[in-house]
Image (cartoon, rainbow over all chains, first blue to last red; front, side, top):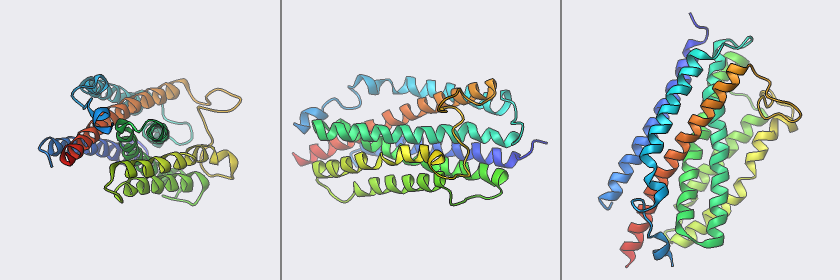
Length: 37
Length: 237
């Protein structure tokens, strides 16, 4: 068992989810902009 | 003048056309960095495996610094040239910088709990980083105070130039004041990196991957801002 596994998983999951969510938000905003909103 | 300067929109600019390639490169580099950080790098002799959090915490902090230095440069360029793309670049970098500062704080907190025994403590590096986060959130909010394009960009540029002062303060706070936070390990005055070679290489690859992700997001966000500027100016005619 890896010591502190929960902390490691939490750190990498938060990083990944934040960056992916931001990238998708940019895409959604760009789409809205293309529609002229 | 603004209308002509704005004309090279996201579809025309050569730099912005590199976005798909940069996106692919940043994803590939991130996958390599992830493998090295979680599998290849050895655990720390004292901290054990929890030290692996450093491979996302340190790049986040570095990218926050980089993002706010880019805000400073773009802000100075706006005041100098009044070219709208410089304002688009500044707001794009500020937004991404806030994201990475927030990440650095949260990831540092996750590392601090098993290492220091607390999620948060009022020590210089943490306080100055939290102040940096609040300052740039304020920078983004200030942009909403005026609908006049030039006035908004000029006010934001002044803040972008003033706020960058906090970047060296954050970095050097561990040397200037009594600090619980770890001293610089890689960029040390009077010595090389105080790290195992595999750990150092993993950290370098993580920083490179993070920088590619930053560059990709920066181009995407700048393209969005340019499209927004073009729409606003179109509506004015």
